[in-house]
Image 1 (cartoon, rainbow, N blue to C red):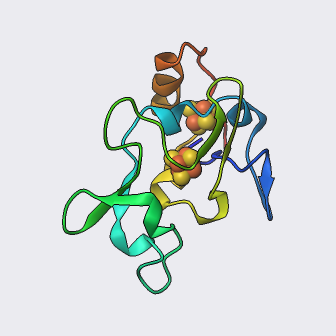
Image 2 (cartoon, rainbow, N blue to C red):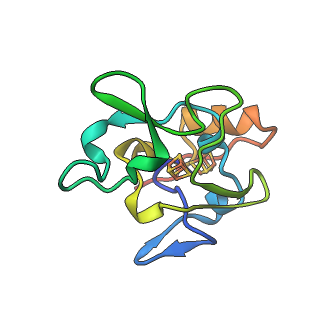
Length: 124
Ligand code: SF4
Ligand code: SF4
């Protein structure tokens, strides 16, 4: 979900659509620290990610709240992992969220952590 297929609630936001697999998953948003350059937050001109949903991890980078400590669960993640999920800031999510790809190694690692079966790689 974090990525290519990360989500909206429940399945679309604006012109963005997440895959059906991601809509019933969300494992990547509940497995890894989601960090990125602070300039991607709306505290910086041109930034999109709501700054209040992030926490600083060093002078240059922030993380989505809820992903910096275990158990990981991004503050913007809605619904229940493995059942039905959405991203509350889908159109404003970070570059890190965009980078996740359904069916890649990290995706399937996250899914395995939540007892979900592996997926095939989705070709662009
Ligand atoms: S772990 Fe994979 S299938 Fe699940 S939401 Fe993330 S990208 Fe989509
Ligand atoms: S902001 Fe959170 S819930 Fe939304 S895609 Fe990124 S990690 Fe997932």
